[in-house]
Image (cartoon, rainbow, N blue to C red; front, side):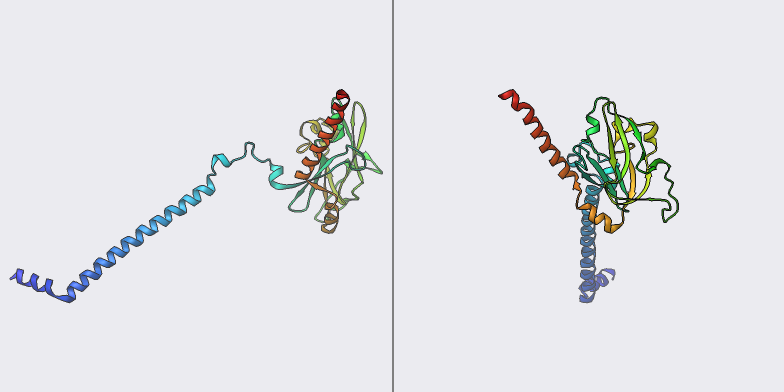
Length: 234
């Protein structure tokens, strides 16, 4: 009796259709799961590539905080030959001013031995700025003197390079002038200035980028080397 009922069920076309649809549905579901798993795997691979860079693409020397947070500009032979300075500009507009590696003072034997902020009509080291409006900030022109750095051989005036409000000078240099010799681009910075947007746009025209600075100084070095060798060849 049971065999007869099973035979009838098996031969029932409606039941066969239901069974077929169920099989197709299961197969489709399995296919979707496989496809989803493959897509998830691809997404994980892409994420892994973003988070874990190829070691062959990593720089030999990691970028410094200055390179990450600032855009580097330079001005060479400012007012006098060899007076090269850097201007590191932050995204908020602040400009850090200092001596470029090719500044003439670094060529003197023994390096810089003294820093004096008492230049012009006031001592820059007693400058005290306060409040959001930067009360007491000194309005400076690009050629305004910031300080005087001295070596055993000579002394040199360091200037603002950009027009703006002088917010602070690096007082540590008064007691630790050697910071200029060891880390002029970090702890040995000279001052911080905030130029107005319009002033910065105008000042930027007289500045050069890091790449342009390197290219310019390489050419100068090659010319000087050729001039030094020329008498030997005669």
